[in-house]
Amino acid sequence: MHPETELIPFLRGELAPADGERVAAHLAACVACRQATEESRAVLEALAARQPAPPPVDWGRYQADVRARAATRSRRWWARPVPTLATAALLTVGVLVGVRGLERLSEDRRPTDAVVLEETALGAQLPLLREYRVVERLDMLEDLEVIRQLDRLRGER
Image (cartoon, rainbow, N blue to C red; front, side, top):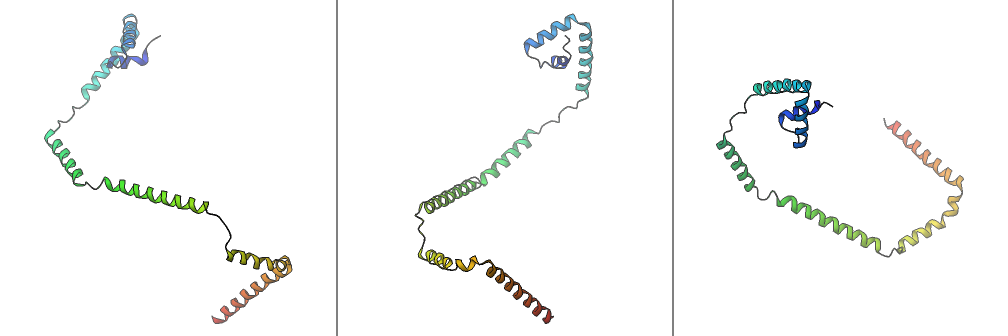
């Protein structure tokens, strides 16, 4: 089995020691793989020769930039506590609202006198509401009132 996919990593020294030894042993015995390795080495060297050198670094300017950034950060001393305090305030409000809601849910839910009176009044009108014809006529009276208002609006134009 030819280690074709391992030739480039072998040339770059990226293989684990055991894999590197295995590929080297194979290259010693296989002429085709040795030739492919030499061709790959030539391509890698040509690519490395064409790669431009990295620009020189002006360490003094870099150091001045880092110091300026550090000074800017130290001037904004309030920038870190503000989000922390805002988060703490929001959490406190959330806990208080939650506790208040739980207290209201746990309160005894006895109907007030006004609710009892309203339900009694509705109960007294229940026989009237059972008569569907009466309810239907009430809807027609509402429609008639709307039509009268439309006629009045048309007359005002």
